[in-house]
Image (cartoon, rainbow, N blue to C red; front, side, top):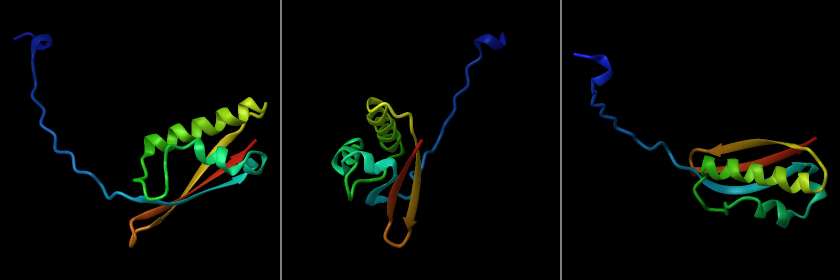
Length: 97
């Protein structure tokens, strides 16, 4: 038997972890240089939505783009505070040069 032609069947069971809903979203650092509405619109996440890591990543990239348009090269530090009892997470994004 040639190993190149070998087939293997792999069976996986995927279990979802605990889901957290967004309690609130705040901004710090250079966030005062743009309107809060613009900062919030960078994210496709609203209060009560399930906190989705991919959406948060896209939002961070969108924030960087907003600041780049103003000539500022920034980095964004996400901070998450979890409330296990309520299954919520508070998101704070620190925008720094």
